Length: 249
Image (tube, rainbow, N blue to C red; front, top):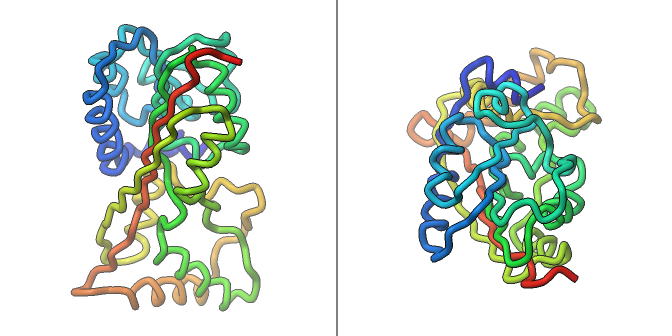
């Protein structure tokens, strides 16, 4: 639903494009022609075509029906694919693995879908994402008198490497890219998050809107971090890559 709303609004692509271009550059450094690729996450319908520089055939997928349809793909989450085993020799996962219900199971399922000696590469939000927003939400909770899960739990870089190894991948590598974006006020950040489909999807979240007092506290906290009239927010992008074993056990 969040990604469908972003599709209808017109997605904010600046972070997605930054990560996708980085992935393409990394693929360009690999001396190999892939036969069949699975692209998970398609906020830009042109991405499958761009990935065809490195793979003969590209299957697109996205949790949002609008994004999936525009890219000529299927609607599905990474932990729910029903492709036959060993269907792909490349999987590019961008911007969706941080919100699957079960990340370890999603990595195992992708391992099942990949042939031996195949590449999983992608990017997802990391643990240090949105520190100023988190502080603002704590300020709001202190006024409302109750704590609510408003920001997704995020995996740390070291933990992601361990999860990849535990799922049976070899040579896991995780790099951190900290993108800094400046905002004049909290509402502008929230607007971007909605346009990226990155707002709260936790079932335990409160359905009650913030009171005026709580919202004012959040905005004041966010503004306290300003420098020159703007607050610098950080989006931590975890870039990862790993290979399936030469032979399946």
